[in-house]
Length: 329
Image (cartoon, rainbow, N blue to C red):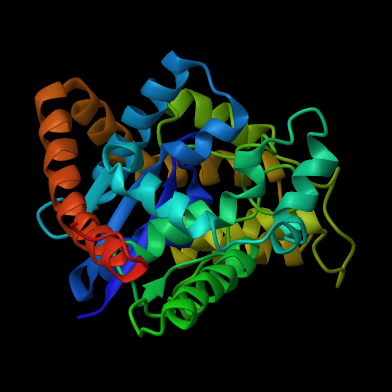
């Protein structure tokens, strides 16, 4: 059984893209591996969140992942800041991370472009903190998206550099956990790109049925049926992609036939799509609300997760300190 570590953003509700793209795979992954899922609230500090917003976001995200099926009896789910050993390993790794290599990361360059008034040290050393999150549990695998591949490669580099500097073979070099064809990409409702929070084109698992209907009915489509033999436009393709994921095959086939015969009514298609999405999300939404209302369960889950994570993390930090030379006098 391999150790797998995955970070969970502490800001932003889960949307359909998250659910079908990764979360459902996490549910299976936890049964086959020793999994550590952490809510990355240290990382969130780079954007200076309001303290109340940070606290509420952590609770919301924790409840959503639990509602989707992450099982604290099987996996370790914890809040990053509840494990102070992460901060210590982050400090130690920073001593062997170089400004030039950090400045060259694609994500840092993007942050400079988008937020030139907030280029803080946390953004620069983001890959080092990510490396600490992973190798503190000596993970063999990490599920990463395309945008995180460079950070995983840097994690491998930092692990390798530590081993080389101190003449040990202590940290494994983690590989990407590849979901392969299981990974489903859900497009947004605005006709372009993937579903996401910042793009404002997402349907969230915590959305009410009324909110979902309103969002789907506003989804971009064509002004009318395509001409005979014409390929669907990108926005229409996106709707069909979502429908193929959430609806019965017979439903998707019906609307594809209507498109081909130029009889399609996009309003009818969107009404059906909204109801099929609600059928999937409503049980999850109800579960989220139930978990949020059970403060004792949330507190117990976080406490147990922190204890399990600290057991692993403290062992690593103790051994790293020994390797570096911090020993009892």
